[in-house]
Image (tube, rainbow, N blue to C red; front, top):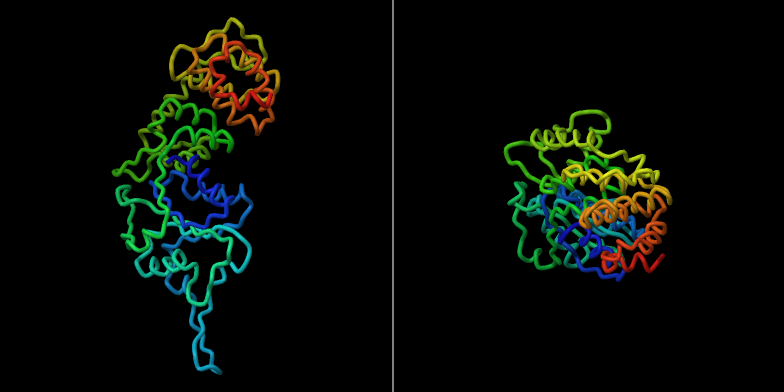
Length: 336
């Protein structure tokens, strides 16, 4: 399952009020926690994100307080547990927690309560964890706890990252580079502390925009390849002319690396009705279908944010060369 599919699954559980507990497995840095947060935001429900590996048993179970009149003790639950409403109780790093904590979490997942505290109706219990094969320091999960979950395993996926990146301000050069070298989106290096992952590329983006080296975020090898890739931008066609409709004689680049850069760069920069039309006319006249498709995918990722969705749909429907893409974009064209 990729992050986009995970988001769809979790969103459906919320919208259908299905309270099955979910355990999300996956390598570090691929967006498990971010996806849960995005679902909470999109569905407008609360999110309590607990790094459960950092808790002591009393942090989750609560503290016993003496009731002198009754001659008994009462458990006072922690203040971070919900008392009302609806939302997601997210137990992150579950299998990094020692067995004592996992046993308490099991009561939430099995009975939706711990001691006298009961989780309100409308609250989902989801968890996430890394796998031992990813080099994570984890404890084994008891079989009884395993059997209470729906288990999903999430894998790195460039198209999911591209869609998120283009909607969240990741530099076009990073997106184009990863389109060219998608295997570097997530590549664990057991010999080095810095290695590329979606989370690491997000940190690299901040360093790059600040004019700093990005190897502290993603490692020397991938950073060196990215720096070499930046030289491709010196060979690209004049984007301003293409966007302005004055580039009928400018050819599409021949080098694959430059083709990725041009297709994604133009998709990001075409933010007006005229520039969308001009760029679409140019790329359909000069590029092969696979590069037209890459441009369209990238433009769709940004179209809602820059309010060119309807414009793009209209020009797709009117462009005769786009007919080969009608099946893939039928739904979009239907809104034109």
